[in-house]
Image (tube, rainbow, N blue to C red; front, side, top):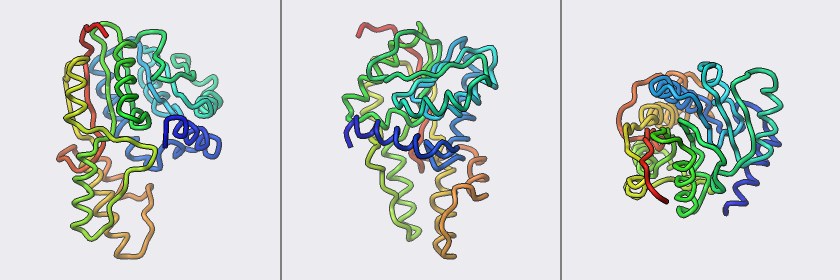
Length: 258
């Protein structure tokens, strides 16, 4: 799928589904992501935060409610997603604003902290992802932080290897996603950011939900359910290993000329 096809995919998803699963079926993965973002926002204490690719805005709203002293902005390139978000959130929080914008076109203001959650994997090819990363850098104030929560091919391959060893089929990468290759990404980021933290936040969870629970479902003839307690308890496990695709990078802006 090309860039315009992917945008249409998300517009269609928003029109057909405004539920908690409109941007991901895996609500407990979203819970993990929100938790690690909350912890880092508390640590860095920014005054302004931007959620780039905010989707349905549920994570943005959760964080804005937790930190009423911080001004939040949520942007997404899908007009339908933003329409759903604005309709659902109208009058609820005074420290948050949603609007349509495409990070590949850049943002017209700066923020002390930016984050993405599985956003840039929807921006193929690699050259477009590079443009998005440069624009995120440009949208940060001096010394600003970028919390990058994105999918990486290495963790995907690792947990699929474990699935095969348990007699389970591999889980393919969806056609609208382009996962990052870690070494390639890190080489590119070195010019733009200092890496303050790197953590695989999905490994324990994927072993519990995509391997053990999937094997139990296969043995009993059941269809896996994202709301099952195996997912809920798996999301509470400590982070360890490299058996899931989703990583957190905490990146501090370098002063460079682009």
